[in-house]
Image (cartoon, rainbow, N blue to C red; front, side, top):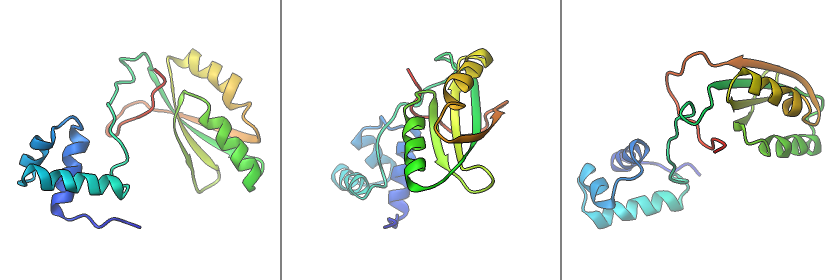
Length: 155
C-alpha cells in the first residue's frame, strides 16, 4: 500500500532526510505542531514503512574508497533458483553497496566501491567474474558525483 502523505508528513520526512538527529521538539517546531502530534505522525510513518530507518551519511572518500563503479551484469539464466543463488552471492560482497534488478540487455546493476583501480580490478577478477551464472560484466566508473547518498559502506 502506498502511504498518502499530507503537507505536514512531507515536511517531517524532508526534515529527517536532511538531519535524522533532530529531536522530536525540533521536528515539531519545523512543522508547526506540538511535540506529541509530531511524534505520533513520525511513529505512524515508521509503522507504515514510509520511514524504514535512520542512518549516518558517510563520505566514501574519507573512508578510503576513491572508486565508485556502476557494474552491469548479465547472467546465463534467469529462473527463480539461479537468480536467488546469484542474488545471495552478490549480497555477501561488502563492496557492493547497492544492487538492483534492471530492465534492458543486462539483468542487474551493482554499485561498487573500491579503494583504487587496482583494488577494483582485484575485486572484479576474484569476486564479480566468479559470481554464479555470470555471462557478461560491464563497468562504468563515476567521474563526478552531483547528487545522491550511498549507504552500507564496508567499514
